[in-house]
Amino acid sequence: MRKNGHDIFIKNEQDVVEVTSELKKLIVNSVAESLKYEEFPDKCEVSVTLVDNEEIHILNREYRDVDRPTDVLSFPIFDEDDMGGKTVLGDIVLSLERAREQAEEFGHSFEREVAFLTVHSMLHLLGYDHEEGKAAESEMFSRQEAILCKMGLARNK
Image 1: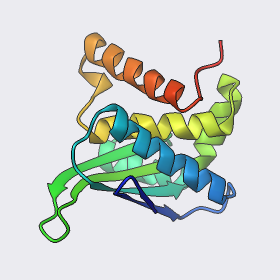
Image 2 (image 1 turned 90 degrees about the vertical axis):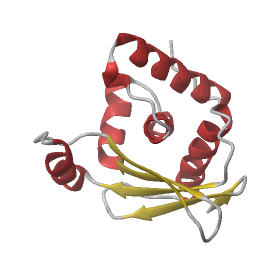
Image 3 (image 1 turned 90 degrees about the horizontal axis):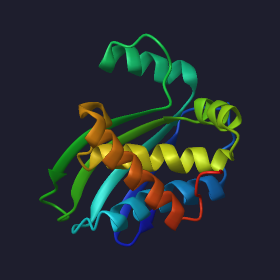
């Protein structure tokens, strides 16, 4: 899908949670709003792969040496494509099964959780890392919430 000149590729590799056109639009909007908020100057490509808990568990173990499922993984590339003049930011792998579980656990909508995880991962692709200390964590989480608020998906109080 294309939004604001950005190419956002969505690949569904799970059959636990239905992937509707509205869900795809939400993911695309989450990517685009993250880029807009961060004033990213270039047109870019981002790939989003939707998986289940079993698949993300395998990837989490393989790439992070963490032997359990997680909600989302980010694989930054940040490579300028000579052919189309687009910056390839990287790949997002999102467990829709885990997103559904967390939405229930946190008491908000599935849509908010998917948007939150997509925005969170986009900020990782753009160079933010909440694991670099309290200041970095605070900055990243503040940006996440600001983007979600702009999307009308503010945290429930």
